[in-house]
Image 1 (cartoon, rainbow, N blue to C red):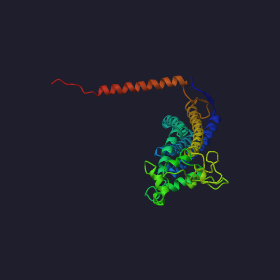
Image 2: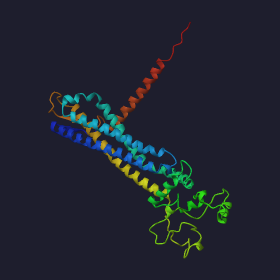
Image 3: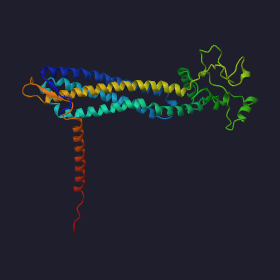
Image 4: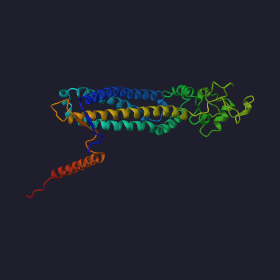
Length: 344
């Protein structure tokens, strides 16, 4: 028994073909949307690629771009088939490939759904990528004279101001690294000598943060140096004082930004997938309704369309039987190709 059979006359078939044709061109625009989202996401990642530990994060935007292009091609072809289905003579040229085209559409819909799932799951690897990338970037903050790293200070400062964050996990991360270049240190000064001498790695560590960590909304002038020294500032207690630097770490801020973007893209891709499933089902009804005309010589005769010729269980059983038959056929061919020993 067919799955979801529907009776059609000429008027219903024409209306079905026109509706699916319209939906296909709407799906073409949806493909352009997927392509545009992938391109936008790729540009956003490239803006801060120096702060990411690897290039694997670009896999998803590249996949979105690819799926968007494929969606445009498949939907344009599907729209053409629906348009030609209004003319029996033009439709005949599509019949030999229509079944394979529908199978390709089903596979594409599955890949599109996988893409949507990846959008929601990418937050997990991105978290580790950002953590390692930010940690390395902070180490190179002071290397303003080193070729290949001289841009890192500017990149981190702009990022901290844009995302209103400080450090990797929080502002105290800056206390653990030397972020002031040696060229700006007076090595004859006692304070510099003491700080470098007290560190096993010979680094100049201090309880301060770059200016980009300062919160401009704070009424008090920014305290970015000697942040744990109460006596260095008037009416100040770092244990109770509301510090006027950003409290949130940049990993959390960037993860929130990119995570929200990926969730939005994932939701839109799910909607595009539902649209693709709808047009695929519509095209299947167009195909079956034209293939089951009661009188093929009379275009006005009634017909029946369906999604599957059999039930889901019967269709699945048929597919498994065909796969088993193909497997047995390949074994027989391998056995037939085996060399036959001859007696001399």
